Image (cartoon, rainbow, N blue to C red; front, side):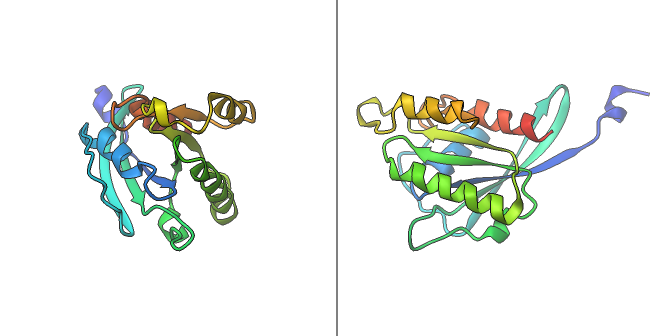
Length: 171
């Protein structure tokens, strides 16, 4: 019997959540296709991508659901979250209000689906002159038990790590 026979196919659904324009679509494009575009395109509803990753020699198929950003007028449908094994909670480090929105979203997911694995991602960390969320604020969240990473969809910093960390958490 070969080791190929022993490997079973594992499929996991992940969602990206966050306020509008935090970089959810850019993070997915960087992770799935290794690309970045300066052009801002609003996600309407949900965009689904797929990527196969490997953990400990086992292939895992990730169904990646990029949910439309949230603001006071638009709220992601919790029906899109059903069946999710985990999610990336995305914050724009240049806009403190997006951290407030992320905390609200986590609370809503906890109520709707229970506590499922997530990674809090502080995106746009490459915009050093524009950062408004401090390293001390991020460190406080880590001390409070949140799994936190700093990313840049533009440079690729931390993007692969964010998705792989989430994958390991759900296995």
